[in-house]
Image 1: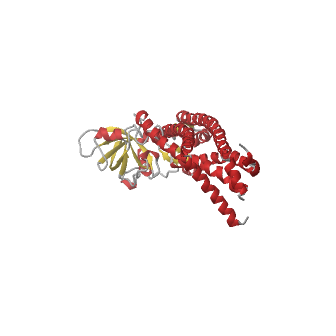
Image 2: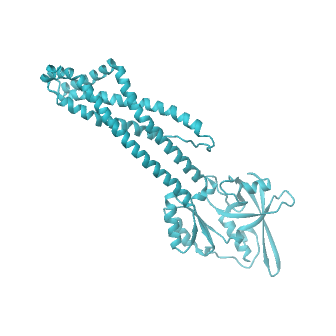
Image 3: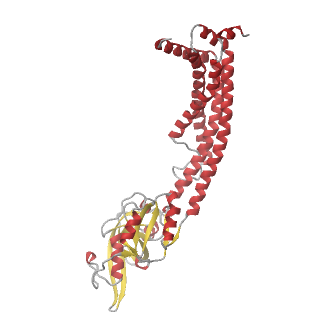
Length: 408
């Protein structure tokens, strides 16, 4: 048979398969609904797993402390050592920190009398998880403050803040002030303390001045200029949840006393693994049963159409062309069943999120699937359909035209 004739035979067989479906549309619809009945619960189950774990993971990510590795105590870390630490792939952000006592100052509103209170200071820079993508303060006159400090002083972005630092010398008590422009206010859940984020040079200047040195860039007098080679501590965050344990272990082996929130992170990861195992077991059993059921359905279809297929074979149709008949019908059943499953899942997802999603944060849902999940589901169903039609295809290939016509 020529290539053109062979292609024509394949097209004819496919056309007959479609016409047979239209003729027996009710049976075809029942088969597609059976397919949807298998796929829909699996999609809902995986949507619940994905939605719940994604929401819990989002909640963990909203709190930067879950990625932070807290360094306990003050030692001395050379700048070169901190720079090498920053280059590690498991480090998401790191910035030096001065001595704890040097990072506490008094603050007030410059336009009001009194209202003096104590505030903590952290060094910051671009990429700081506390900033959540917002711009970091630059220069010596910008600050980002915590919500608790903003509420205590009735401040907001665009206002000014006066920082007051003191030191005790032989000559007496010295005092210096620095006016800062507030460029942002942190969410309360990000940093609960009354404090502010400042560029690292400002923190260095405050520590150096308290140690008796001069700070020419701020116009503060002292005995000489401090040539800094290191810092007492640093603030560090892992690149992701999987990096927390190895990074904390490495820091511990370097002689540092560290604290993490790894238990909270691992509880969510354990839940994810458990739900994945449950889903894999259920999906494996369900889809295996579906393969057998669909194979039986297509086998029965071939038996019902054996005489018709035998006639086609007697008219010169090849085994390959005859096999196209159950293949097309099997794929069309899976395709329509997948579409119906998507519609049923969408309705179920809406109901689940409406009735079970109360109390969740913005953007968080109980049941959710991404676009690639739908693509994967459709491809999986087509693959399963191909596996199932192989049984029917083998039956078609074994049909003897003469015996097929003589069979009652």
